Length: 122
Image 1 (cartoon, rainbow, N blue to C red):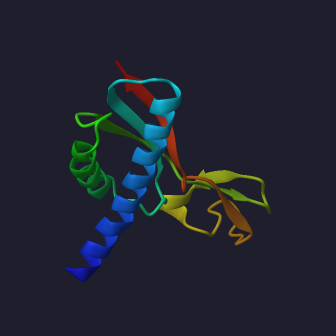
Image 2: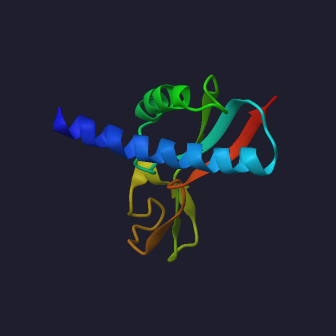
Image 3: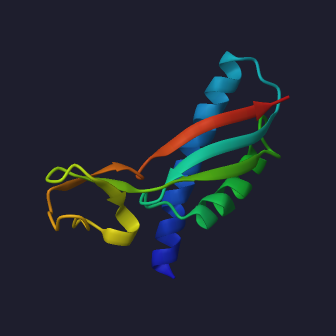
């Protein structure tokens, strides 16, 4: 139970940061109502989409600018690059060890991001 609570706190902190960013953008652009927000979420970002959505639905109701805004999440696949053989592969399926040459000289090139992609307003 405590672990689940801690995870929700992580997602809630992310949601508060996103809301604050959107409110700043809304003020700068004189937006009246935000109806939809699209996030790009990396496969290995450590964020649980369902938890993020729950936190979003709770938190936006407390704002004036986006109290009915929907959250859309687009997944960014995790990809790893091997420095030895110069191949790129799916991180989730193969992990740190390159499936092409067996090297551990690899690094994540995408998949840990959380990007605010689009804000729709009326």
